[in-house]
Length: 322
Image (cartoon, rainbow, N blue to C red):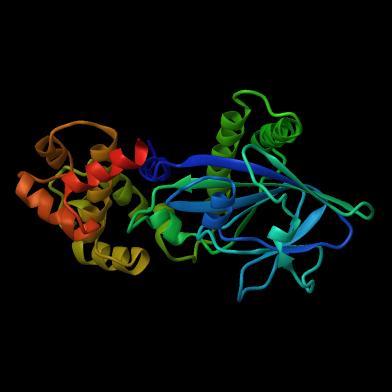
């Protein structure tokens, strides 16, 4: 499993409900936050990533304090921080709260938002991805507040567009099981958007995502993720990627924003947290998989990271799932 896939698995990514926007003529909306949108749909999640895919026409998207971005057909727009944002026919349009245009009672299953009867037709599929809130997730922290990605015109994009067209049909006449199918499409779209964004990053870019592409740091991070229980040292990591200890440590700190061993500790805690919630394994067994030789040392490290003991974390997860 690659590093991106591991991180997506660690945050328990799931697809959310869908809304189809059929827009004609002038329009400008300010959305609710991701969490408030989910609440309107009768959903309760810890963290939400809203997204929009332009199927037809074009639409401007923006978050407070930043210029709006134009999305044409085939563009996916994601809001990794779950912020309120604008959708508009023009960058200088004055947005109104989207609640003014939604049905009075929302909302189980897909919803159609129809505005205007004349003018150029813009069609947008709106949805959200939900995940567990973690104190540290390098992937979500590394993404911009608004991420716009052209899904392109290759085989994957063709499949994605076909799936989104299917989503449109399902939103008109939802059937049993259709919501889970649409949710899966949203998850795959998110992964594809991430990969395209990563491929387009300039070589001069900094941050965790750029570190994955670095010929030295990328393999080192992959090793830490593949074998977190190993007794890693900065020297062994540096040697494995062909750098001196000092050069590797300096490069890692500059790109990732923390030392290699601090990164390892945080990743070990993510691994442990997932095992605590997803399995009934004994505490010592999980501690060993996370690189700790005693449950006492593991409990101390876990409490520093999450502010609670592993046992309490496990109980809170069980309560949330019942």
